[in-house]
Image (tube, rainbow, N blue to C red; front, side):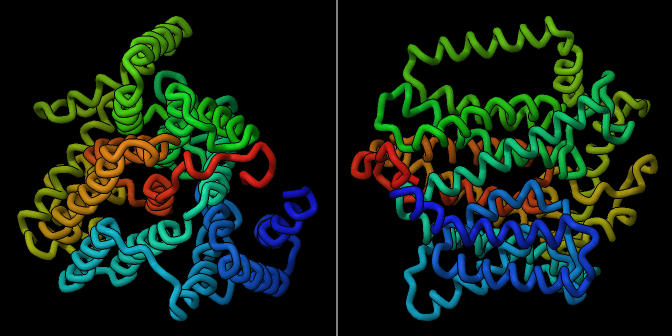
Length: 475
C-alpha cells in the first residue's frame, strides 16, 4: 500500500480524535460549540464503526487509560472518550447485524450472558437503581465489545492495528505515571517507604496495575515467542519497536504502583510466559529475573518491594493493633468479612448489583473500618455479595470459559499459537484470576480492556498462511 492510500485510510480516525480533542481539551469553546463538536465526532465515529470497525476498536483501546481526562456534559450526559467510542460502535456496527452480518457467539459470550443474568436477577434486592444499572452496564458493554472484536478480527492487520492502540495507551499512561512519581504529584497517603505509588489517570494504584497486567502479557508473548521459536514475524518493524518500548515502560510502571495484587498477578503471568519457552531459554530468563531483582535491591528499592510483598501475608492472621503499616491489610480483611456477611444473609440474590456500598455499614463487623472503599477487594466476594451464590458461580464460570477456550487453542499447537497471542491471552487470564482474589477488577473500563485482549488472543488467524509484508500492507 502506498503512502497516499495510507493517509486516506487514516484520515477519518485522525479527524475523530482531533474533533474530540478540541471539544474535551479546550476550555474556551462555548457549551454549544462543544456539543456541536461532540455530535460531529459521533457522526464521524459512526462512519468509522460502520466501514472499518477495527479502527474504532483500536481507538477504544487507546481511550481506556485516557478516559479520566476531558469528560464533557452533552445534553445532560457525562461523556468520556471511551463512552463515545462505545456509542459509535453501537450505532455504526449493530445495523450490520440487523442485515445479516455474521456474528461470532462462542462459550465466552455465554459466560458473559450468565453473569449478566445473575446481575439482572439481583434486582429483587436492589437498593440503588443507578448503582444496579451501572454494574449491569459495565458487564454488558464489555460483552458487546468482546462480540464486536471477536467477530471483526479476521486478518493479520486487524490484530496489528489493535496492538497499536494498546501500545499507545500503555506508553502514554506509563509516561504520565512516571512523571507523577518523579514530581511526587499525588496524595500523601500514596507514599510508601518514601516513594509515591504511581496511579496514572485511574485515581488509585491498583486499577493502574490491573490495566498493565491486562496489556503487558499479550505484548510480551507476541514479542518474545516468535523470536525464540523462530516463526515468521507477524508485525512490521515499527510496531515491534512500539511493543518493546511499551513492555519496558509498562514493566517499570507496574513496579512503581507498588500494588501487591498487581505484582502477584503479573508474577503469575510471567510463570505462564516462561513456561511456554523452550527449556534452554527458561534458565536464562529466570537468571535475568533474579539479576533484575538483585539490581532493585542494590538501588535501594529492596525495602519497598519486600515490605509490600510480605505484608499481605498478615492479612489472614489474628487481629492486630491497626497502624499505618498494616492499615491496608486490615482494611482489606474488613471488606472481605463484610462481603461474606452479605452472602450469608442473602445467599440467593445478594444485596443487589451495585449495592455493596449502601449495605456496607449494615454488615461490617469492624468498627475501625466503617466507610466502604467501593468494593469487596475481591472479585469473587464482590460478585457473591452483590448477586449471591449465582453471582460468584457465574463469575467463576465466565473465567473458566475463557481459560478453556484458550487452553483448547494452546493444545491445538501451531499455527494458532505461533505468534504468541494465545499464550499472551492465557497469561492475561491467569493474572486476572489471581489478582481478582484480592481486588475487584471490573471497575472503570478495565472490563473493556480485558475483552479486547481476550478477543485478540482468540482470533482465528494463521501466521503461516498470512506472511507479513515488509511494507505498509502489513498494517
